[in-house]
Image (cartoon, rainbow, N blue to C red):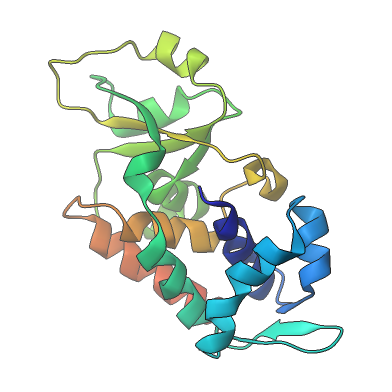
Length: 198
């Protein structure tokens, strides 16, 4: 994930999960160990699009939904795939077999968040990890089979959130081509809109 995406994810997390859209660029630079110039670079297009309002001491995200789509259209999920394979296990069995440090996203994350609200059946699962070795042992490579397990490179700050943020679930779903991705994407968007009062 690009470093500027850390900033966009954090702003969305604050606005959606924490119900606190305020931030300062100096604070963000400290949290993510980035230069203030890089943080300013991440914020500049948001300011130009009037997604954020910049103040002298505190700044605020004023259009959370627009920021969500801004990030979604700039995300490149395919570049994050570090391993893929096939398993004969049913989808929920594959999810249950993942090591605890692996964090689900996309369809699996929706399942873990909202088990009784699945908008469609799904086959492929996506998980983030910093250490894919355990997953490779549990699910060996099967190059002749159509993959149904996709492992993504976890960024250094993903564990900060304990579980995948609602915004990241949406953004990851936006970037998937499975026919059922749109159903999940629309469902998570409705949940996010409810969280931010739209």
